[in-house]
Image (cartoon, rainbow, N blue to C red; front, side, top):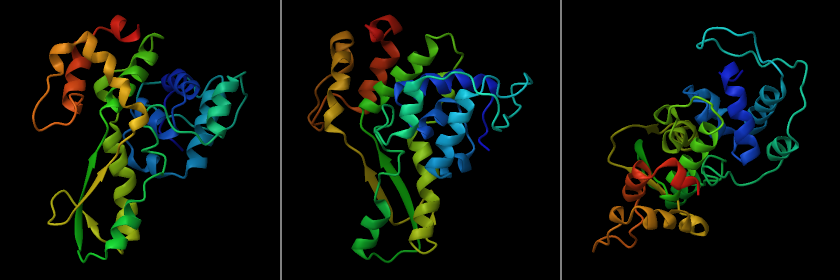
Length: 236
């Protein structure tokens, strides 16, 4: 059972149609239960589909009450949402980072290092901030209450998923906060680098060239610009 609430249903519907993966939908539903992100893909998508289609997931109750995802009477649902669940496509929010598309374990094994613990560090492309902000506004403009600070970050969800997998596949190696052996995972997505470019026109003071940076569109600069830009200007 996924720890979802009745109020999550419209968020699930909106993000399914938008093209978000199951794990990103859980993030935007502010699900902080790590085990939910480790469930098999078919289990997550099936249960999200049930939640999206059920006319009423559970009787109204306190906000902390969890939903029972039992099959029930189905209301008419969006064909786009069904299609997005059934197809294997790259998520518009995380660009595939949370879709089991990372071969971290194989890369570490290939080098034949000797270690008994490791720290996992992740570097994400700056355009993920833009896409995250866009998804948040997509939900917000429909009148759905969602505090941006409560959304689970991609980096945090990735660590929840990968830490147990890395430990298991590398023979019980402990994944810790501090270690002499660091595994760095850097994600890039050149096809969407231009997602950030419009921010330079709206907030030019946030993007100043520096000698030690190849691009002005650093993650920090993009975050700063997103804090300054109004919703109306972003959505234009």
